[in-house]
Image (cartoon, rainbow, N blue to C red; front, side):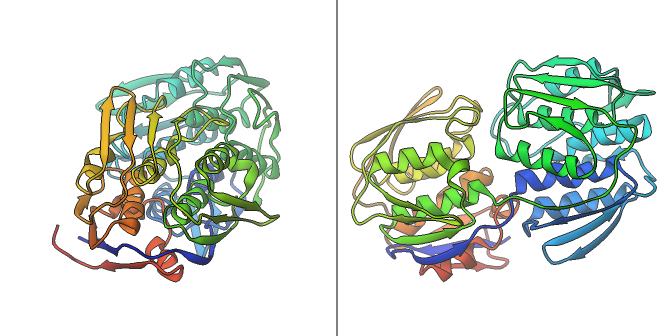
Length: 420
């Protein structure tokens, strides 16, 4: 099992290029099942979740041609309508194949999802929405079995602005008969990117990125050629890393419009940020101040940057209160932070972090994707050496992050096959 080893105390300086967004890439890849035409998707991040998605598409019968960060997919004949447990258990987004398979074939069988253990993320919103479009659903031995002769448009009110449910509905509604109106839709940039990909296939979608999305179904969709947008979570991670290490980093691909909530908080903490057309520059000459954050659906502060901001808070001046409202079990990294000497008190959905001047390196264990990178961030500022174990979580969503950090001056390496 690989281990990431970090020796802290170095300022990060230089430039780094953000990869394509994993959270946009996955639904776009699965949307290729909606057509029998060739689809080309570029700027894909080279991460484990993308590899899992391509394997699943191949297992379903799609022809997959890879060329670096670009993949051509042709689902001319879908030979299987089942997404097995072995694949879906490792990546929650795999459940998104249910709708496209159902819309294309009229039936599908998909395992209940797995993924990071950051709290309950029930798919009942997805299922209820599909039922409103006419799907017949059964839960059989851990699998969702779906049937529908032809899905029909409907008005769907989401109880929560779920990203996955919104994506599912947009894909399915693109081939449904009539108009679908999604109310209380998720507004994340990844939703906008999926809508752009679907529109390039011929889908009629209005309002993506707003609370109400309208989709007018087509009898068939064509191929596409789409470039995945840059990963705002990876970009935010590097901005926080620059601020924590009191460095200066040009983060290319970072889009200020996608990161507004983070930029507000970093400036409040005392970081200097320069917004450019194709990049954001983060600088910090001194120890930053503690700030309070509360995670919320977009455009609020993203839950996927909560762990990284807690890492920053551990070495900031003063006290930070971090409130997690999206997932109930997303403070597992806090206990690992204590091993560095951090001062953190947990109370339900709140974490009170009292910054300390210096942390000490320690062996720590990643519990989920974003927690894994937050442990690396703490290791960058802790004295001595930090070893981060279970980095397979990290590999699900960050492309060569140890190489990118090393290029910025960090003392970091991946130790292959290390014990632990």
